[in-house]
Image (tube, rainbow, N blue to C red; front, side, top):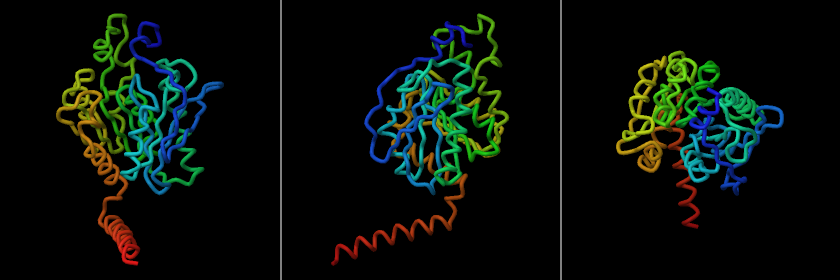
Length: 282
């Protein structure tokens, strides 16, 4: 899988200089190996809110989420978006082995950060497209520590995806078990799992998400299909409903959606309205 032929198909790194920080965001550099630092960007809703560790898609960078990160915050979610080696302003060169090995380090550093900053320990692992491999790798390894797994536009089998991208890696003797093997790993994951996929995705067809959902070992699992969306348009097509679906899944898992919490939020919102009314009448 680390042969040049496969690497050219698997990875499409795009380098950028650090971009200006969006309001409320923070850049964090995480070391994954000697002299290799991965650029990450953290968007904070509050240290009492759940956190998402997010692995993005191929050809994307952390900076591509500058307009999206604040939407997660608006729905009460912290999100730490990570790059890969050779992407954005990160060091190194991406390889199959590095991608999986680095995901472990990034998870451990994220968990360490939550503890040091006294954040709530509810941590969800999320991966989009290529990032589904990192997310499933992490979720399988640390499922006793995480709250849940979220996969967007993810793949179950690597060989059909590679063939779509132009590399028949099965022809050179590589088996599915020697690839990312997402389907084989997700069988072992029992934590609540939420999958989102575009109905019109032709790069990673819907059957891949359906297989992940069917093979998932989670008792609590859900597949949301976004009508009319392709591989890259789930947010633009789904709009606020995309974020509402994520919020509802996370609140259900954390218990934040129970009646006591709904009543507490109602009272807090009502108090804020009353304060604004008092100020307007003075």
